[in-house]
Length: 173
Image (cartoon, rainbow, N blue to C red):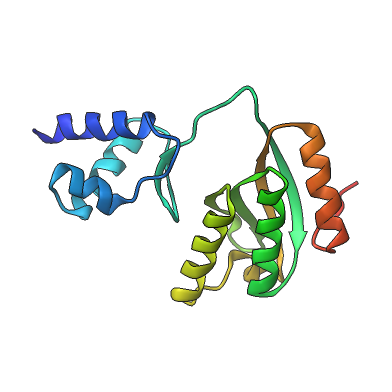
């Protein structure tokens, strides 16, 4: 299989799954190095494919008419509160698409998360602690924005109510 065929197969694989796939797993499928896959993904992106890299792997975000994308603005500190916020959202039926901070020098800094279950939250928290990473919100005194996917306006309102009770939600009028 040549590089062009491999990239077409990578794209087909990503299109046909709803779950992120790690670069090393794609590399194993095609018996190439992870770096080759990183280059293939870069070429596919340059050709206009909407492939994102999440902490769980590569993914093509599929648009769904059944789901709503909403934004919430939160503020909290520490790993325990990060985990609690994320768990609260997924337990109520939301999926955390990304995290965004508004940096005074660099402007908007955005990172995909794609967290949709308690297992995803656990994996994310283990990774953030393993690499001893500071969350993006540490750049903005804990203030950050999440884009969340919800099945209905009612679910979104329940998420907002619960986050407000926990004093994480910054209410924007």
